[in-house]
Amino acid sequence: MIEAAGVSWRYGANPVIDGVGVTARPGRLLGLIGPNGSGKTTLLRLLYGALRSPTGSVSVDGDALPALSPRESARRMAVVVQETGGETALTVAEMVLLGRGPHLSTFQRTGAADHEVAARCLARVGATHLAARPFTGLSGGERQRVLIARALAQEATHLLLDEPTNHLDIRYQHEILRLVHGLGTCSVVVLHDLNLAARYCDDLVLLGDGGVVAAGTVDEVLEPKILEPVYGIGIHRVELDGQLHLLFHPTEADV
Ligand code: ADP
Image 1 (tube, rainbow, N blue to C red):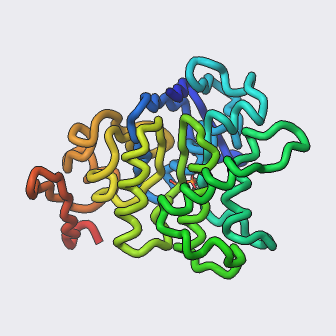
Image 2 (image 1 turned 180 degrees about the horizontal axis):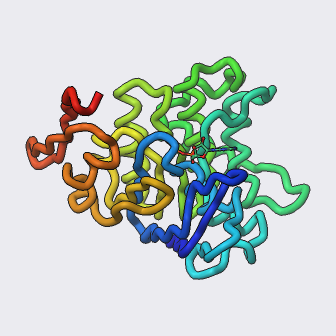
């Protein structure tokens, strides 16, 4: 469980997150949604400690985040952010093995069991065939899948992902989110596609104007009357085969 209460962040004089509270519950996938620039990435970074809020608190399974060592933090939280691993000379298999780092003692080398975990994680994202390729030679979508495999290899109890479906074609967007949803870990994902959020998230936090506009289950948050003023576009909600879908209809007043 990740709990943040009263956290804030400003870039220069620009407050981006202002006294926000969120709770990511065990076994559930929490989606952070909101328009571009609403602070989703900033909030995610506050949750995993890349940014340290000057106000409020963040805790992981009841322990204050600043009190955790980097190794303990990495055992609890695996993070997949955009555009990482840019200019590395590593192969894909080596990249995924890096996820084992928090489980090794100083100077301990990876062993057969670590290689097995890494191979299994690569298989889970459908990337076994890429194992021997240099990471830098991959497409954006392939990189994304490998970075998710690396996070899985970390075997952390919490997974935090920043727009993991960027660069992925539609099939892999669904496969990756189905995978994350099925992991049963406590996960937080920044998503801008509301229909992907509708299908795969359990809970949502909608950000707007530096704060939480709405928080609750997918069913509670994805209400047109809540979303329309935040996104500034007409929204129609339908259910097909028991699945919630949103349709967007800009009117002349919107554009
Ligand atoms: P989102 O993920 O919802 O698009 P971000 O958290 O990335 O929002 O950004 C929120 C706001 O903070 C935006 O206005 C963005 O321009 C600004 N911002 C983000 N990162 C920086 C930075 N490093 N320096 C200055 N402003 C930033």
